[in-house]
Image (cartoon, rainbow, N blue to C red; front, side, top):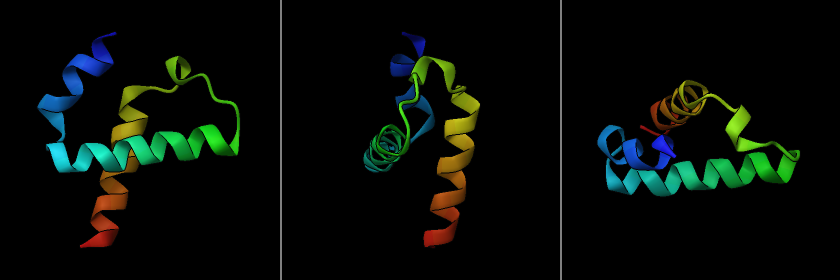
Amino acid sequence: GHFGNSIHYVIPRHHFVELIAFIKCIKDKNTVDLSQVSTDELFEELKNRLKGKK
């Protein structure tokens, strides 16, 4: 889908790993259908996590 194609434009490659880990974390916690999770939500969560690491 468009999510996979557009993500590299928004997130630097080394941050992509972080996003994958976050998605796996979601899948572990509860069976979330990723098509129902908005892209904005994922980006927002990722931004918050990256901010906390600096």
